[in-house]
Image (cartoon, one colour):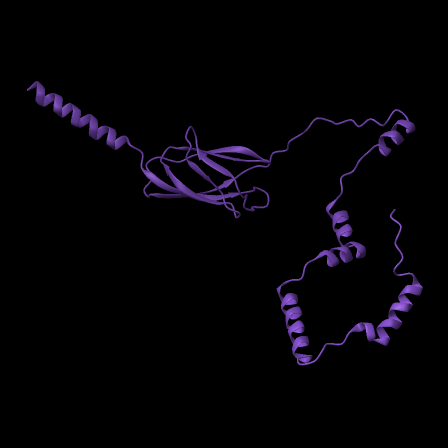
Length: 209
């Protein structure tokens, strides 16, 4: 008889605990400002004393699984922390709210700016200031005509230029096939250009700086 009473007591406790268990619901809603009723994005929404929760989207909407009786914490920079307790004994497994969060103003300490003791000290510090080269200055330097010319002269030919050079060389061979190619040493126009360049001093050795 005692065993039967003990088993009945255990079953009663089990059914009682099961009846007391909170139901899981889908908790959704919008987080809005009280004055303009605009959605507050990226609000941290979590259940107190747990690591479960979510954040609101860009429109202030949120939705996650919670249980009846949970205390929900709403927090966001620039707004006061707010709480909401989900009611018990809901008749549905979905529950929605509209949560208004009041803005919070942060005050920082006063910053006092003192001038330099003298103009001479300010001048000395200003002249000793070394500013880093900005992206705009670096871009303008890279676009200078002399720099681009130097880069162009040092740049190797690409595949298209190499192919064109090879085809021109082969065409020149076929053009003079069966005969000796002309020699510029007997070209009067080439000699005239050489003499003019010599008079201009193009062949003088340039002095190094």
